[in-house]
Image 1 (spheres, one colour):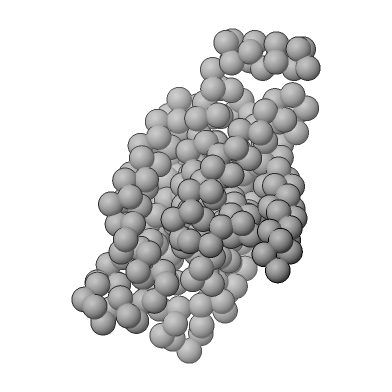
Image 2 (tube, rainbow, N blue to C red):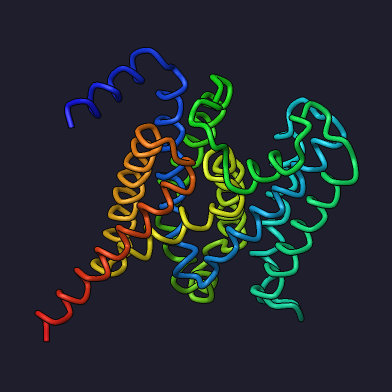
Length: 288
């Protein structure tokens, strides 16, 4: 155990990218968990998967056309799709779950087709490696740059501020949108805010966990908290704590064992969910 702590201390002191990974991982985990509670309660938890595939498709287009900063294309496209899915999912002939499935599969297929058909400017030359890194996150914890950290910090703080400022409105729209509209709440505006937050978190998370694993960061902490707590506020706080702890644990395991960061964090999330599920069963039995 002493060797493990010594190794971690050495990494923190001598490898800046490890510190970057912790900063980015904690912020993304925190933002994802806050968002996850709202999406799970609205029965829209799978939207994270769909939008992550949209981001993958946009990233493939950006890579093919040679954009030096793919955020210029990925972020707007993801935001637009998030707005369309949340705003029109209940009012069109193609309902929310079907819309998510169509966009998810379509964007994933087109993105992979483009990356295979056209040369990727600035890519590694290994199509399978580029695609795998985008889908499952980088296999190296040392891949983050100072620019990645600053972008993540700024956008994460923006997400947190928006969530705190509009907490009560988001709460109202989450539980009963019809009643919220009847009381004068501008539900459309707060749906837009939720959509923008979703898109920002998903694009940020692609650097750490990849587009296929983002939904896990959104869903598992919220579901874990719901096994033990019942109120919206307590579930949100618990989900945030669980998500941050899982992210830190996953990153530490990844450093020590050399495993992929994203997959390791998700595996820790699954293990913690199993623990909370057992706690929920025990609490339910005691109450009876």
